[in-house]
Length: 183
Image (tube, rainbow, N blue to C red; front, side, top):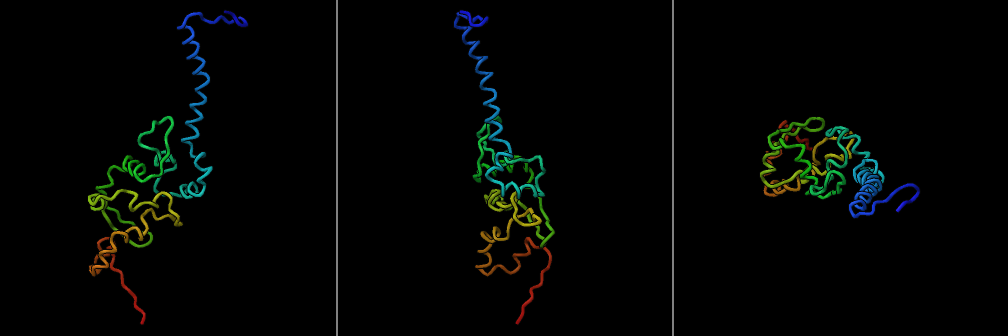
């Protein structure tokens, strides 16, 4: 069979080859479009502009880290990632880059000095987002890159209730603070 000078194959194999080439030409742009719309920070910013604005000011992650690195589901392929904001997905992605976090002891300064080790909290079964829910999208200016105090109190409030709070603050706050009481 001829059509405008082109000769179409008459065998089944010829039709398969022609179909495969046609599919590759047509589907390649479609696959690229799916990849672009599911992994481009620009697309994420269409709906999440407030979060994207906070991310720009992040001091903890370099500008080369985009939405996909933290929000990509573990089960998705790299070509068309499935985005996920669930704690399970984010925690596994935190550990992928921060493997040595368990052995680090941090001493943060800018506001109130705090010193703590992740080892104890990890041994207790806590995961990254239990404390660090705000870490990448910190609303404070400048960002503190540490958990909010209210996150600490969700677990440590029981120490205060049992009357054992005296001195327990100094486990993390290692500088001697004085309390001013006005009568």
